[in-house]
Length: 249
Image (cartoon, rainbow, N blue to C red; front, side, top):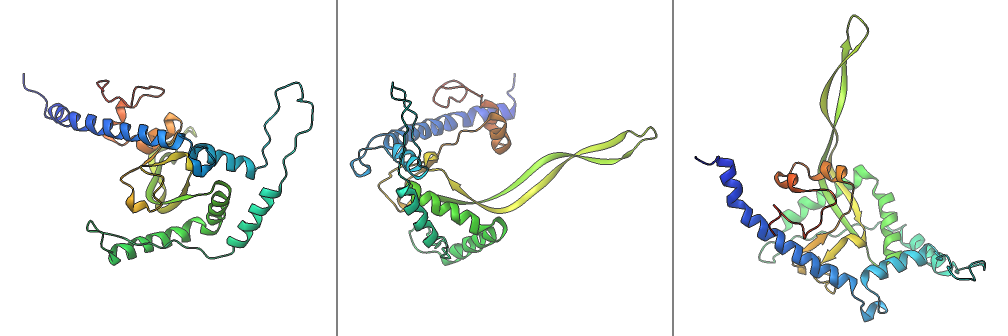
């Protein structure tokens, strides 16, 4: 019996997909290990622990005692937080904008592409309240020591019920259609716990071979973001197994 053309195509591309998944997962494991290991220049803390410690100090967090002295008052000085807020107050008043430089495959500067992305960023800033976002950029930078901002371009849609009229008995007639909430550029702050570069010692993003972003979210939300991809049917909520594709990895 002849095979369906689409089935044959799936069989042809599956080895390529499997190999890609293996490589991505191997890179993920390497990056997670680097971000979880202590480093001398971070006071023998891992990057993940360093970010968490910065947030705790900035928020003057004091963990509850679990010994027989838990009745004693615990206090942490707000000096660090106050000085951090002072730095933020000085920097947030400055009109800081990203400097965009594009490079081609030959590592040569590409002015046309740079101009295109600069226009995209300016459009994004005009429509999303750049001043408020910049405030939180400064807070994250001062509290955690580093901040990563990503500019995106996307289209957000959702199904809605639109009333078309009423029948003779007063019942509502409606039709279901797709409503577009937003189309265009938007900027987001990537939490430091989600970003795993190939080499955290390199500050220049162009020198990174790859960057993995790890995001944890409810299954339904992930479906809204990524459900249009062909391989989405293979995503199972709560499953583990090295991102197995067709359970053959």
